[in-house]
Length: 401
Image (cartoon, rainbow, N blue to C red; front, side):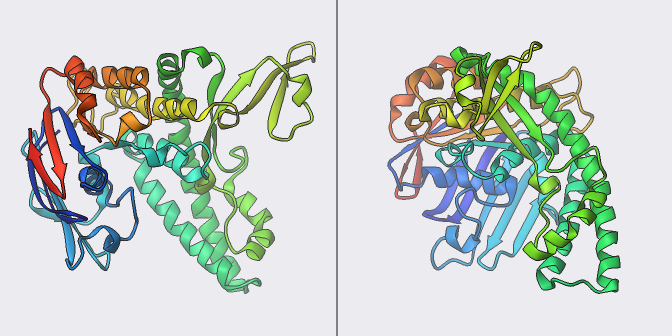
């Protein structure tokens, strides 16, 4: 858990020093800097901003770098400095480290904000990252395999972009990369599939709380991004000509996805010709189930609740994990406390959903930072946290209330 946070030169936050509690509420008008405070914590944990990928866009004007420093409740310290040219300096306990994953392991951070509320309609990247966040923190062997896969994929795509006709030397090189991709892909899929299976019952339980009327109709599915019954290198070889024409690799772990399906026994007959839905049949061959993407059926408000359920369901799984990885110790309290960032949730969720969300968070050993335009959120906070810190942000200055 973060005990003290220091931020300098991030957007309009020139210098911030604050002591934090298990629950922290940041109140301020739009543009005051409250979301920037969440951005700073996310930057420290993930090495990137959730608002813009270029450091020069979030580093304060006329400054060369942004710095975020945190002291955790076990007295360890984390720090990141990002310069305008994207040069990054990372420190753990005053010692320079060279991989962001080191800090990410120490400070697992889950973000729920308005920008994530279109996850169901966006491309697969954000949904894939949702699964990979869990896998990273629960499977120690996942990250090295993922890094190696991404390195080989970058090399392969670079070669595909350069030419439409491979020489024998290039073909030999490509086959070597494909074999490596295949080996890493098999392990990455194994980790993802196992964690996805563990995640499903938690998602189901979360849906029962947030969308009880749809609890029997919503389900998750995982797509590996390729046919896992056949080695990836074999499939890549079969599709090589098409990949050369397109200039990129079309199948593999990087195309994996998770989908939320909506199932109904109604109106299957009227939709049987539609290409956007799947019609299942019963044992007698009669049309029984209409299955399509939940995003095509639910209202915007319901989709917000669904995405909240997806994210919220990850926390109890993470905290109940008994992986021997140092994050959670078997039969003991968590050694590292996940941090949940909630940005302007009163604008995205109704009172009932907010109450369920906060009630669930208050019962989990996690730290919460949330922003709000007004102090209307305070009665909810006082109901679930006996002690919390309140901050008011105005023109980049943060005052403790």
